[in-house]
Image 1 (cartoon, rainbow, N blue to C red):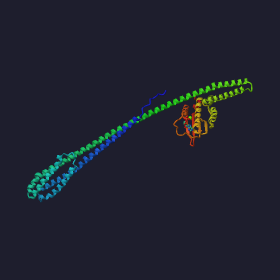
Image 2 (cartoon, rainbow, N blue to C red):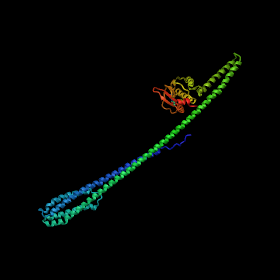
Image 3 (cartoon, rainbow, N blue to C red):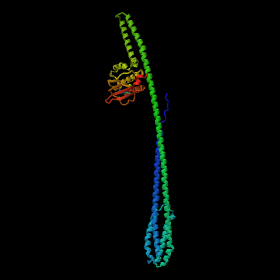
Image 4 (tube, rainbow, N blue to C red):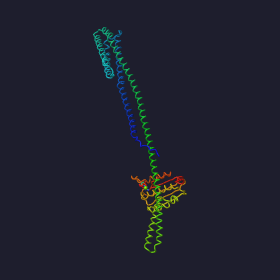
Length: 447
Ligand SMILES: Nc1ncnc2c1ncn2[C@@H]1O[C@H](COP(=O)(O)OP(=O)(O)O)[C@@H](O)[C@H]1O
Ligand SMILES: [Mg+2]
């Protein structure tokens, strides 16, 4: 007996889950990468770019402060022939540039700078210009020596303090830029790691889903094969049961009823002889005797149709010679019968299958094709026996919802004989049923 497997759960849920996990991993990965990239962009524009712009302005300020330092050194130089007021315009020009630079710098300065830091530069510069203005006022009043002393005492010191402050800011900017670079690198590394992780997870999900798909597919195919085998087994049992029942009924009809009817016939004949010639009873007895004879003929032909004894006694070919004219008579279909090849004996069980297939094919021609003519060809080939039944009728139309089991039984019988059966649509119109049974099965298979 075949193992009976329980109808398994449908794999759809698990497969959908696998698909969902895969999709979720992909979406999560995309979202994560997008977020990291936008974080990177923010870092780049908000910190690194601003830092660079800020450093540029700081360098400009530093440059201006250096110019001031040079100017002051020249002003203190005793060899210079010019009065101190001659530097006033240069100071003014540097002042304009410095103020502009300071304004721009305050706009781009990175937010991390403290308010004190922000104010320090501006305040220090304001004080520097205050002192410078006062020194130029002294110089204009002719107090050159006092003005020089003030330059040395206060102005140069203020300039130095400013320079130091700017230098410190530059260093800070550098440091924060380095930190930003480090952070950017960290982000890149992290993203790379996470993307690998996501990729591995996605691949794993895909592999698991695919494996499950393969597994459930295989299980499905096994179940299908088992089912098909069950079905086939059942059909073959049915066929065997049908055959033995038909054979039994056929034999009973032939032997029991046949003998009874024969006995009745001969008794009537004998009784008729005892009745005087010309009496009405004798006429009636002859009529009853004729009825008994025709019933006997009917019983014999019914018995023959149910299970042709000729099949067992004189083989398939003789059975067809008797059967085809019978079908013509019963159905009114004209059958052209052709036999070709060197005939070989066909054993009983194969013979009955071929006979049943022919019976069903001709039945179908009569019932479904609408054709009034059919062709039956029996071909003894070198390695097989081929039976063809052809009609030029309607051909197979679209599958009718209520199908009989004729075609199924034909297939099962063909399989039982180790042969093949084809149902072909003819190009013009009509159907060709082609059965092929291997020779070793048809003439040696014991029955
Ligand atoms: N020779 C034929 N010509 C046209 N249609 C056919 C022919 N043989 C079979 N068919 C179609 O195939 C169907 C199945 O045939 P079958 O299995 O023998 O069942 P049934 O004869 O009981 O309907 C038929 O109902 C018919 O539609
Ligand atoms: Mg049929």
